[in-house]
Length: 259
Length: 349
Image 1 (cartoon, rainbow over the protein chains, first blue to last red):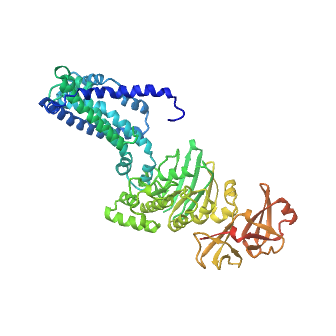
Image 2: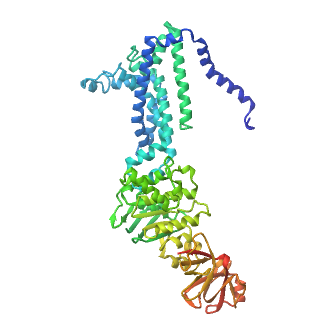
Image 3: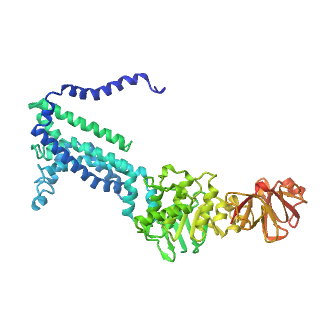
């Protein structure tokens, strides 16, 4: 024990750890093991699981495609209002997801800001699988931007400057120097964004609804089953916990403090 | 492949102009914060001056992005890309100029051989020592085949034990290249540069041929780091021999000259003792000198003179005021400058 640490600190520390772990243990104890396989392979459960995997992968891909350029612009350029923009970009991390869902609804919904335009183009997104992906991307994008931007700032611009003086055009520098240098941060950001997408509930149910097979992702399915079929809810919850544990394991291996 | 540079940056207090002729190596000397690295950054296009111009090989490049300027930068820190092997680091510069993958790898290998690290081609930078990494960085800069090579204290971060060997490599590399070398070290300037430009507080305060600036510095900074005694000649039989027949014995370092090759003996005026007659003692060099002037130098007196048999070789010695009085040192006095062979460094030129 470090000589500077008061002994009494151990007591609240143990309480905190127990508080975080006990509910998970309680849930595991409540799992109906004989019926487990049946519960997580029921048609509605399989639909929800498959939908969650598809949409989370799609939104993670979107996060990488959009988030890496945003992180690069925030980390490597200076323009008026940049600090404000960086703070605002992180807003989805702190606003309640349900509020995010409302905001999306009034942007892309039928009566939203861009709803008329979308309708004219023959596209309606609210309450579709596309809406699920959009809601997930909205809440997960900041995770990827934060960890990638942090990695870019840590890596600094010196390697890029040298690469440029060696004759490499900006796109080659970005592809062959910048991206490889921030790869650990980018990977851990990607894994976090995937985890956030997989767990997304509030924005999704608000903006996309809860139609089985179309918009009812795994967390929404858990929420729907919790009264009618608590055993199914617990079994599906366990699936989400296992995925979360795997994700934490992955970030711990690849990220090493990138976030 | 000449370089012309003018840069004014108000916020850094820099306002300087300098020219490097084709094939010439110019050493930029000066204290920290004098604007030396700023000059390099402006040339490379990493910093935009308030006013100025950059011309490489007669082509104005001041408005171009760094990768279009034909200028490569070798910094104090090798800055090898950590995710690439030594060979791929060198090949990167070739690939940037459109060389295909296969030929780029072959050429990278040749360049690594040239700088003496061919056997380390497959290593990652984390598995290289500082000196090895800097050699790879030299090969990488050469791979870009720049019109002008910029070197920012390329040996400052290295162990003194590996400095002479890298300096020798740089001498070979810089022989017929246009280069601008920022350094703190008079010896680097002496052995690598044709001409010296001294910068203080953002302004050029002195410039001239290297040997002249280093032996008779006019600016304060050059006087502090330089003020060296230099005797140039050919290496014969353990001594540097001048055309006038003067012999200075010394210790060749890692960059030892070949027998009969051009060489320079370098020693500090502080290592020189002054005698009225022949000092005697075999390990000493005794050089007959005619005193030309004396000036206070800290708590010492700096005695300047020229070699009696060779008026073009000027030397300096630092003596105590008591010694100066006892020896009756006045301009015109004939004395012997004595320096131990072990205090004299000998370098190939």
